[in-house]
Length: 160
Image (cartoon, rainbow, N blue to C red; front, side, top):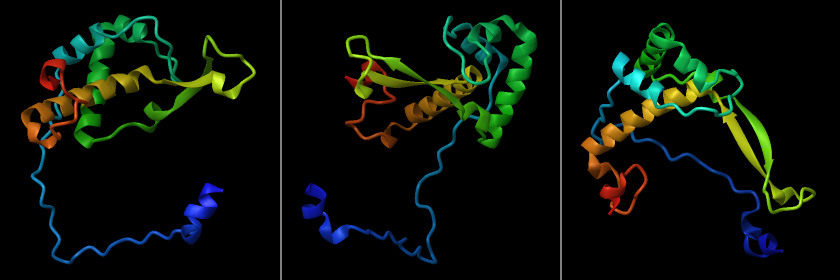
């Protein structure tokens, strides 16, 4: 009923793209994000990985990454360096296993009693941690890029 009354005149909205002026040039300052990755940095990230977490579609747990030691780390270092250099996020890292988890206090026969949980690749999450740290560095170096009232990407002391 609400849609029929309020949005009657706009039942079939059409979007159109505004023309780009011929003399258009990007007016933003280019933001440089560090693309390198050192062995020491990757080693620290691997040491800090959580244990006993569910794996994604590749079934590689964090424990296997930690137990792989220097041999696996060298291979991961090369893969992640190429991903950073090419600004590439492998499609396999985006695949997820969707698991429905029941809310503890809700009856099982109600659809609202369930919440989806996406299990992602541990390797993909490791790459995302690296990218997130690069973005954090860039935002710390250029604090004017975040609005004053945005608290995401800020530490607790920066937000206060």
